[in-house]
Length: 222
Image 1 (spheres, one colour):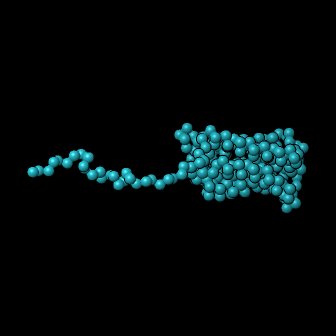
Image 2 (cartoon, helix red, strand yellow):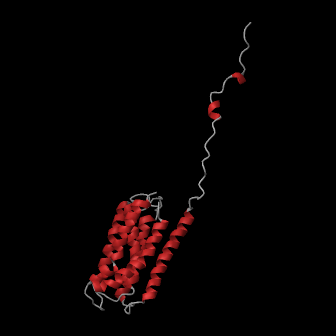
Image 3 (tube, one colour):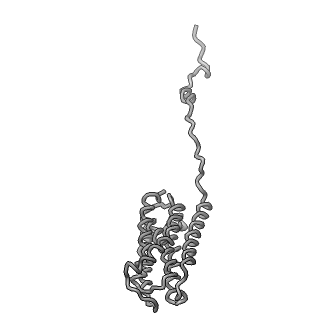
């Protein structure tokens, strides 16, 4: 007498053991990543706070008496325009979705201090003071105080936001933020000696570029 053919239900399930496994309970992240609109709003807010602080510093220490001098207005105007342009070169995406190339960022990083030094030598009739520790004792601390909020705001909203060459892009961001401090102290200090302007007013452009490069290398990469 032959055995009855096996039924489909009698065939062992080769995946039964896998199906009985209990998956580990992995907690879902509670903090969702911000949307593009939220990121854009954070960047605008950080920029406004940085500029607002620099303006407040100028309002506290007072404006230079020759502020309406045409050469002084040219200096302040060009530096003011260069600041957002530098930030845009570092982080603003093109139509392709990628930011400016590394070559363009390098060009911008070289252009900012070069442009600052060139305008510092613009001939202006006014207070001439030889470069000395005494002449820098007021300007250097104030220019750093005026520029710090811009750098702090940039490091907060741009962390993990630099797609490539984070150190280089961070340096450009820092140099652009340093211009905020340079602009504020230049709107106050009436000394027109080029050496004083380059060192006393332009120091944060270099200092914050170094700070920005460190920030980008450590916290800037996606």
